[in-house]
Image (cartoon, rainbow, N blue to C red; front, top):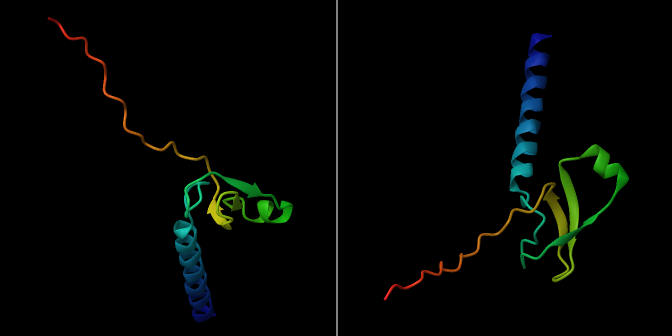
Length: 89
């Protein structure tokens, strides 16, 4: 009986590791991986309740659709304009 329990635990740990790696490979934000534009969510009541950490999205610009991690879009860094320094004559 102990052998069965150990084998069951190892199989469950493998499944957990595969799920964790697959989750980390998903795009982290709701921006399209191809054109970096904002995507629209595709709602599904059943999948939203079963898997609340992921979400299906569709890009209006290039037509890409797929699964991404659920979350807020991170602000993109842009170069700040140089500060205006008054010249003293």
